Image 1: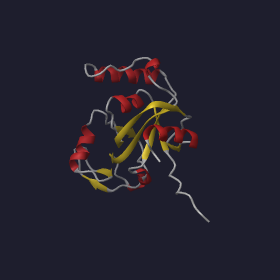
Image 2: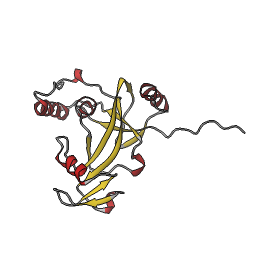
Image 3: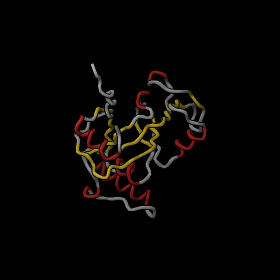
Image 4: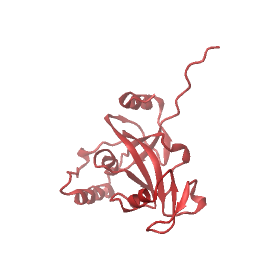
Length: 184
C-alpha cells in the first residue's frame, strides 16, 4: 500500500488580548507573560498568535498605557478600529521561558538559574545574559515570560474562534495561515 507524506503536526494557537497581540506583530514585543509554563512540545514549533475578541475597559486602559510607554517611538491605536479581533494575526516560535517560580510542580523546565530576581526556572537553551535580558525587558511582567522569536505577521489575518490556554487551530484556518507564511 502506498502511503502519502506524513501528516504535519497540528498548528497550536494562543489567544492574546489586544493591544498585546498588536504589540507582538507591530511593536517588537517578544515576551508573552503568562502564569503558566509552555509545554515542552511547543519548543521551536510554530505558534499561531490569535487576537482575542474582547475590547473592554481593561483593553482600552492597556492601549492607553501602551501608547504612553511607546510615546515618541511609535503611534499606538487607542480605539478598537486600530486593531484586529477574533483572528490569527501572526506566527511565532517559543524559544524558551523564564519563570519566577522555580517549583517543579509548575511544569517541565531545562534548569534553575540564579538571577537578579532570585532563582528562576528556565526553559530552552538560554544563557544568563538571555535570562537577565528577559527580566529587564520593557515587556516583562511575569511570573512566566514566554520568549518569542521569528515573529511573522500575517498579511491577511485569518478569522478563527479563540479559546483559553493553548488550542489546536481548525484545519481550514491552519491551511489559510500556512499559505501565507509558507508552512507545510
